[in-house]
Image 1 (cartoon, chains in turn green, blue):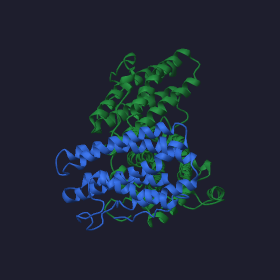
Image 2: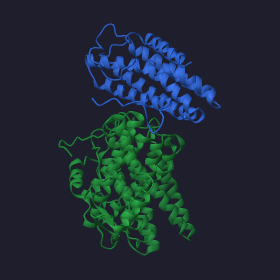
Image 3: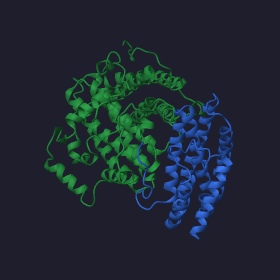
Image 4: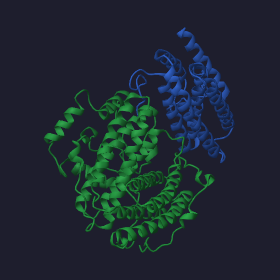
Length: 392
Length: 194
């Protein structure tokens, strides 16, 4: 691919502001859309939210009024982008349906990134994490059948399997064991930086989502399951954000963010079958190219460095939503019993892990177990979608 | 075919809201079935959909809406909105019921009905059921569940071999007739309760 976002002209910022009618996008049809269209929407929503939150943090640490004004201008446009992207999701979907779609994103996005990641230590971090998202999908799918009598198959549409991963009760580790070692900003492959930012943003939005929607449930088991998995999302955000080199300057991070948005909108534009949604990816790519140009100017001016030093000279191969069934089954066969110790991975249940487990489980088992017990009691089985053509 | 769920619990005592929410899922499943089936199978699945919709909407009108009207401030208006949606859906259902499931206009019309029914169901869950559960005695919610279950027994959600093609199927017939019979059953169940 020869697309170099540093050399493309985007839409001038003063022509990016949209009116109310342009923001008012028609939602996708949850019963007839390509499930991966919904996955791309959820991903880009997480990316835009990270863009906005990052920009706010940067502004709070920035003494230069002109820079703060520039950040505010771009950020308002990014907020409009977030509104357009996330409002593609339909109001007729229940929270649990959207939750299952979030977990489908976590599974297939993380699996693809794990497959493509060139650095072995980072690759291991994604392989480790994806088996946990995989189990969350399974637990929520069982809750969905209990509460709504619907099968998660209707949401994931045979693209993603639904079956046990690393059991959710074992995701609760001592918090210090969630901190990974960062990549080295001077030596890391530019693609590795994009991967870390993408997965961190997606997990962060999943964390935010569960934090906010969990208490809207009336069913005690649903309320409890969202609490438990919400706490695992906290672990995942810690896990992934610690991969990013904290030595990156604010300017460098800003460029990385904007570059990543160009990469993802370009990737999704290339594979989107829904023409209406594709037009949005294309429009937003045009906007991001300009945001990137502005970020690069800021970096040159305030960091005294060329952005070309920190980002790839051309976009990597497109990030793709596609089934990862065999890959995931391979990981299930080899990594299901891993946990973390310090910044590494071990098989034994070490002392800190055991202590954490004892405390959280000291007065009754975890909700993720309870949901399976209740499902078993109601249906005499658990709910799974095993479609890879061989028994798990 | 998977097992039917035992209908006694979802995290504590069964109440009418949990039951109706699960029926919303069953209805959506039946829409899927009708869309995917062809020929006689589609006809049979559509009959089951008509039956379940009729029983479900009648149960809501007889049991749930009257309680909701009195249960919370604004209940009257919320119920009026839901009744208007139900009237529209019923008209659409009757028109669909007059069509041959094999004709080309059937599926587009079915999809329109589906969209309307799903919106209605979600609005009930968010604006009516949530308030009803909050303001009603759990025993009352459980008693209402019993009446709805009595009606539900009239509408099988899964195929029962032989029933669909039997000309004397008790639930066969136009939408209005199915609803009348569901109403009788519910009133009897409510009456039995005292």
